[in-house]
Length: 312
Length: 314
Image 1 (tube, chains in turn green, orange):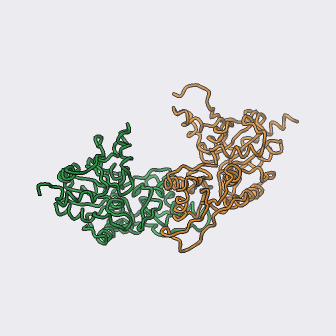
Image 2 (image 1 turned 135 degrees about the vertical axis):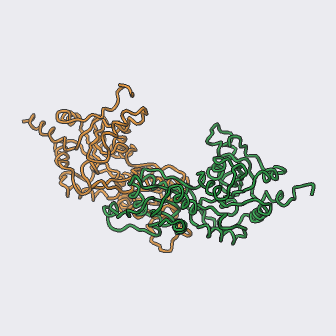
Image 3 (image 1 turned 120 degrees about the vertical axis):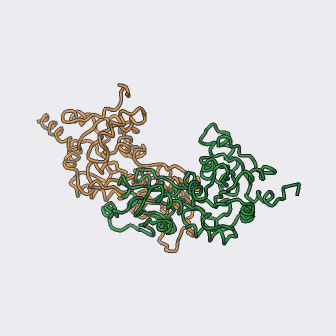
């Protein structure tokens, strides 16, 4: 929103903000957990929000887990979360292909088994998952047999990414009517244990460069991630709060969809970066400015626990 | 309409016009794929053209972005395909020039992490540049892999054995701002015979640029460096005496333009004349650098010009 000021969220503002929304959408990594460590206080925040009648959703660009796998991870870290509250890009990408693209049939997938499972769950068969090393000669690779039933190339995070996969994807994409969808453009993927590796954005860029075509991406900041949640739960944008740690995905998504936005500083972006966007002359950059920021979502606890109310 | 100011002609030439050009130039730079051969097949008449140029005392060099073979292999291929007088020192590949860059420009001290094939490694080895050994450790995963010490440069070329792990390692090395980031070339895809294509080094470089947030220094065409290599070897070379002959507007023609050379597009390869014409009528003046001065259907079109020269000499 062009008026967003990135104000420090504290005092009576917290309660005001929480009262003005019915649903809170949380990014995961850098917001409620880091790798496999929950952010202190995060689980309590979610519980209390639910106790106060708020709907809570988890919206992540990570395509390596199914909703079920996310729900399991959330539980194991002490979060009160149900499978249908989780929106990862594996699930959303399958939903996108099915409902927005009307795809029935097969896709060539550069991605995880989790993505394959989510695709199968909506009746789309994915081919290509797993290791695919090169063999034979250059002419063989250029003439790889293409499955005529494949209607789209789908790219998500793939630790088995190889030249051969890049090649197959490119060969399919030389067919003009072959769709091209990517889960997200994040440049880094945080692993459990705290390390980070090159993200899906790199793999997608490799395929886009070779094929000289742009993919449609599903993940934040694409509006589809919000629409996916909103459609299923009847959400009104102005009554939603997006909480994230990345200005160029979480906050930008919030702005694009007319949500209220809250930046937490436990992840990637800094308050200084947000301020720089705010003070720049650019409308594009101003869309990355959150309404508010907190050091950590645990900063919401006093208001949620009623500790900030002097009348109590 | 882009006005009538002096800009590239994109002029198809034949016969006498070619003869005049051949007489005016003494240095011919040829791209290989799509210009003098398609895979294992020489373009009809190409060997005669090259042999004739050499016999007439013209300087002929071959400038290719293909980083997959060492230069010795190219010499063998030339011989196999009927180009009889081509010597090692006439061949400038992006892999050979990458090695020269590391050895002579950067004067690299330390190891180089290479994402590329054997041909690239061999050129580096021959130039005395230590490469990080290709790691066949089956237990190495993205969650746990060893990094080599003292890596001073990452070099990306065509690599059909690319894995995610290599990308991950390269991006770790590139976190050090002192570690150089080089690419043999930026070609997004390479043509093979029969209209087929393969992903090019450019796609791998792009992936690593996204991963590292850094831009690679590109050695190959259209960057000027390969011409600098040629100039070092052929001292006294005068750009005004040169003709760059290629098939790809975005590499060969731009390369020629960047180095102040006259350029000729041959239509036996990647780019179509319509694309050149589109660039020519573009309002963006930077697009004019992609436009060739001259166009031929094939370099075999030089042959009648030689016959004419011979007739004149008789």
